Length: 609
Image (tube, rainbow, N blue to C red; front, top):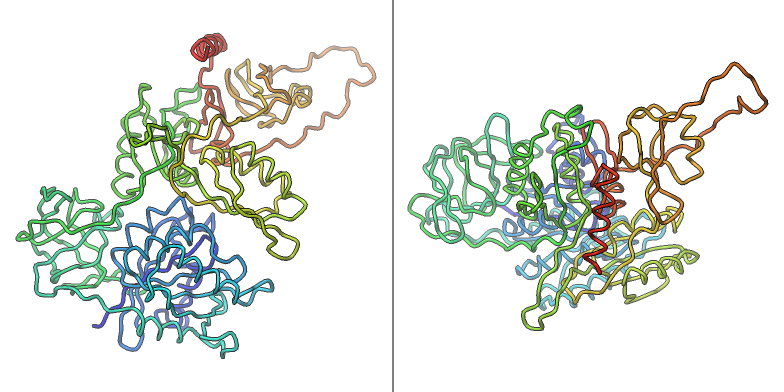
């Protein structure tokens, strides 16, 4: 069968997964009476809860006798590694751009990777039915973006469609019939080349996606680069340097048909398949016939920029909620994650029973932690730190920088510029974006954005939108002021009492409610001043047989501030940790004993002096 392999790439929330839904429906993949969930490709529980795509996934449709393999990719910059590694499986790409928001940082990041591979994209301006749509300006923006990214003449001469993924239509003009997506299907067949690969050579493929199946074990997905794959054929796995990892047989051969994987006996060159039967193969190793001696080339993935310390939970309540609490179990789980996620790196930490986990951003590592807690793990997590490097040519220490693209109401632009300037941000552009909003572009150190998002939403009354993307390494920008407020720290073990919390809430914002278990060293709130304060949250009212005026006043508590996992990780300072269990997320000091805390403070002060 004739084959086309394409990836759909775009910024987060620009409608990739919704468009794939309509492509599947209109190709006849689903029965007329078949119930299909919205955003069917987002099969992961976390993806459905957050409304974002986290993992790259493959599906397949047929149109006019041609099979079109479609890879739905994440849109968030933190999951860029998922996009990078699948680009060697495709011969074309659909670049989806929001008709109102235009080309945002993640679009720029992924399109640059695709253009460097020589892919000629199809541009789809999506959501043209929005009231604030500006499709013609967005068309110009995309052309300028391609030119800035070094596109050649063929790539600059890109075909473009106007579409509404939710309504399920795409047309070559804005005044088109707006009936269906046939224009997009036909454009894919005419514009995306069929894979031109060696069909007579021995079988070889590069593993680009890895997942675990309870029945099949490791399932590795990739494109057949040469030859044909047959069920139960002998294969061996090669590293990039040609060394053999293992030998085995393809006990299962799966191709994609809509949302399902179908078992087949044979698959041809250029098709995207999933194979099982290998116990050690991982990304981006080559799976090939025994006569193949050299590994196929694989796209190098950009290195991580952020690291966190994962420790076992050594708090007083450790082991009460989770089933997997030892450092051995944590280590095995993290190593398994690195096999399937090439953007994550794990090393041993100088601390005992702790590991340094490096990734692309807070969200990516936050998703890993959330996944682990749902699997029954208990952890304590340290503050995120950026990974610096030494420029050998200049001898300077360099740190990762990001481009932050911010849309805010004009009334809030002043406070955003002020806060980002304090965090060593450099404003590159400021322009009105219509409807009383301003678009700000900043270059800012990655560590300057750690912990800023919550403050940003507060400053903009929840109306601001911030998009960020890694741009490269630049010289160290200097010190950046951290959190200005201290912590309210528990001095007792037990259950928090309403009487005590009522008197303590004037000291600052509380994070706990009456009845919650607390322990010595646990952070119960944010102090209204810059210093830490130890408090007693379990102090009860003294009961007497004398009744006096004012004794029975209603003790109304302000609702506590609840933090999500990502907010907690961004909030903590260097001497604090986030305790993560299947049932709770708590903040605590690194040293629970107040005397040990004071000794550590004196030591850090003497080291600084």
